[in-house]
Amino acid sequence: MSKNAKRDTPEQEEFRRYCRDWLASNVPAAPNFKPLKNGAEVATQQHLEYYSVWQKSAYDAGLVGCDYPVEYGGGGRTHCQSIANQEMLRAKTPILPGAIGLGMAAPTIFFHGSESLKQRLLPKLLSGEELWCQGFSEPGAGSDLASVQTFAERRGDKWVINGHKVWTSTAQFATWMILLARTDKSDKYNGLTYFVVPIKSELGKSVTVRPLIKTTGETGFNEELFDDLEIDDAFRLDDVGKGWQVAMTTLAHERGAGPLTTPMSGGQGLAEDKDSKPKSERSEFPLIKLAQHCVRNGEPAIDDPVIRDKVMNMLIRQVGIKQNRRLRHVPGLADSQRLTLQDKLLGTEYLQDSAALALEIEGPAGTLSNFDSAAPDNGMWPLAYLSSFGGTIAAGTSEIQRNILGERILGLDKSK
Image (cartoon, rainbow, N blue to C red):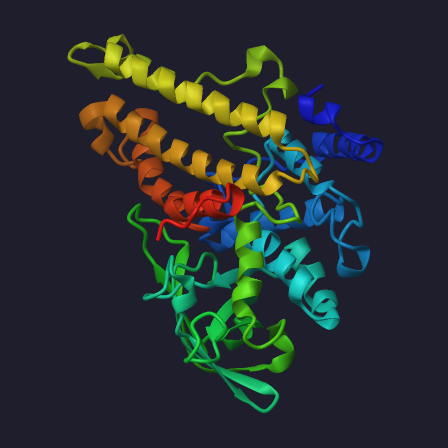
């Protein structure tokens, strides 16, 4: 039994057994394409169909939306989504393509939306029947989110939106977008209002979606141009001018620090519960295997004392992060905000640093792409390194995470 299970309440213990039993016979077969690591990588109709079927299946079984009220399509449970997350991780399930909706849109709508919006939007969001995207970043407003210039002009009981959003994952498939817009140009923070936008029905008319190609050669990100998009005032969340406060709810949940737990992207991750499987099945630390097989100056890289020391330091960091997650993350714990912010910061920087070390171990072979048959580990490390910068930027850069931890959690003075 894992340490997580030992801390379960009777209700959670029963639910955990149910999740394990259901997952034991319902995890789908692997797809006939390279499995995706998160919902932001959904790029083709084939991806969408495979993963949407899985999310709907998990939702119907009660493993998604566990902690939302029944009247909004949820399971009506308390602190049980984290249990389902742990068991999906343990069972190595596919990703959930609706992660943006589940992790950001759903809690924001729940805490700030009208009763009619909750009943209308949350059930199909949780089931994955409708996908969501996030309309925050703009060409001139990334980390400085309050500088957004996409403008919403009120005309009676309607709003007319014009502007430009960017770095938007899965917008090409999304039915809805959570959108932060400026409604008052004279006030940076109090001049923002938050909307939910029916984006799919407006494609090709008032909304243009264009794909963006990442440095890895992959798609997934998009930009959107709004040209006199008209929406009802009923699609506004909270009061006019309260957009910044609503956006903080979204960002808290995106960083994993909100009161409603986000379902995992999938069953592969850094935080694998080692107590949930026999020791003989545990995977060997990948950097050790890589160093054993790569040659430097005619000898295995693992024989280089500098490389060996760096690999062991990375292993220590990995074990520390895993133990912190396993032993300190308890559903409903008052200190969860600090732990999740810390976890996001440490986890994304660990992934980036481990990929950088892998390239150092590979040497010249680290320049080979994942399409080259001679590339070590099928070229996964150059791809991982290039992709890792998204993790240290998304949901607030590492610098922003440190500021939040220092100022809001530890009570330190602002740096400027």
